Image (cartoon, rainbow, N blue to C red; front, top):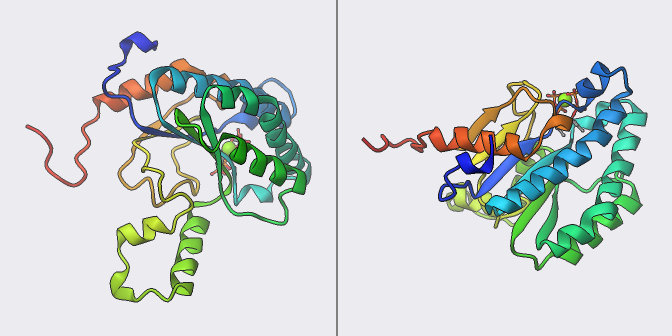
Length: 240
Ligand code: IPE
Ligand code: IPE
Ligand code: MG
């Protein structure tokens, strides 16, 4: 699928992506799983540039879940260094392209201090950029996000009759982030795996067989063309 097949007037404002299948990509090539994560770097960059080219203004990618700590310690360690490497290798070019980098997730003593510093520095460096907000969900869990919101609401002593959808959204990690219009999961798995549980309520879901390291902007455009054929009703009866 190339860009020409898309209706450029109906580009989703916010695309979210579960970058899955790195381990299987490597295993199929008799490589260690970490080589699959490393190969995902080109996929991520091509997706970001592909998103910029068609005017997507919010892109959220799932890089490490609150459950991924269960993985072998060497793989977790690799992922921490790898995410630091992605920031140091690409933040200047992303900044030049007016990408605002943000991180969504829990701060955690297990996140190495050096990575945390790069996270903070990259967010600070790019905070005024307006073209695309790239949110990296890192040590992110949808349930953790809701739990953290509930804690803050209780600590603020807000009375129960003031609690509604809008108020809860205000206590999520980024209240200014619109809900995703489209969520893509690669690798052929049909599940959400604790990604953006609150925000995905009315998101269109596209599941693709491609493994993340093989994903390129054309896959993004293919998912968007499927999105453009969907009829979003939000509980209403839709147009006749
Ligand atoms: C996704 O790929 C990357 C992370 C979860 C960090 P996986 O590592 O889950 O790859 P598979 O699903 O095992 O193939
Ligand atoms: C979801 O993938 C997390 C990321 C892509 C970062 P997982 O591979 O961890 O999900 P499960 O274990 O297959 O549900
Ligand atoms: Mg996986």
